[in-house]
Length: 238
Image 1 (cartoon, rainbow, N blue to C red):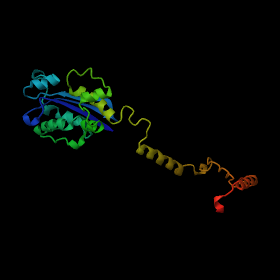
Image 2 (cartoon, one colour; image 1 turned 120 degrees about the vertical axis):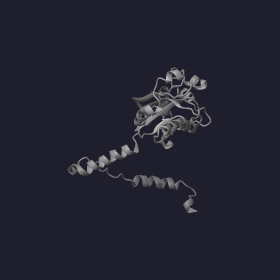
Image 3 (cartoon, rainbow, N blue to C red; image 1 turned 90 degrees about the vertical axis):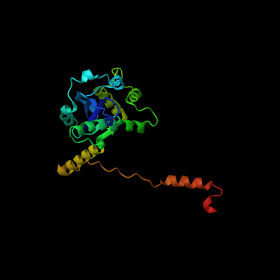
Image 4 (cartoon, rainbow, N blue to C red; image 1 turned 60 degrees about the horizontal axis):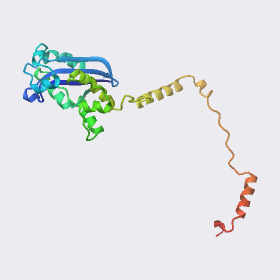
């Protein structure tokens, strides 16, 4: 199963206020584990960088001005994510920005139904607890030493580890065959038994065990009668 862990960095909190995407980071998971395949792009937002946003991710207007605009990377980005599920922390935020950028360059939006929102997973798993990415990393003992600033690709790697813990930890599915796998094995065994070597069908059949005697012996009956004679007022005589 292929999934894409995705994160963005932006110039602010709302595309409706003119804020733009400045970084996209994606990593590929197969069966919930990273494959090493990544997509990463810095993006020129064609506007200034507000101080609060710069303090979060450290991406300056000067640095970003040397990188392509969103429309120039959109094709590669969409090709990388394909039609696979997207693992996103607070999906409405990232998809709101990405869909605003896609709409601006006349591309189809990404439906929110594709997202697996780890913020929702965390709130359901730990009601009332802090559910930020930092808080979840601390909860699960995930190393945050490299995270001096927010970064889309770095945060995607952290989120992949958090996601694995949220769905069951590093032993997720360990030693447990899925229903489909069990069914496949069972069907295969049935097919083998029906299609091949009927002549050996009874060769390894277990022999029937002789029935155990359950009737009392004469000695047991006599002992039982003597025991009954000791009862002064048995219920069955009242």
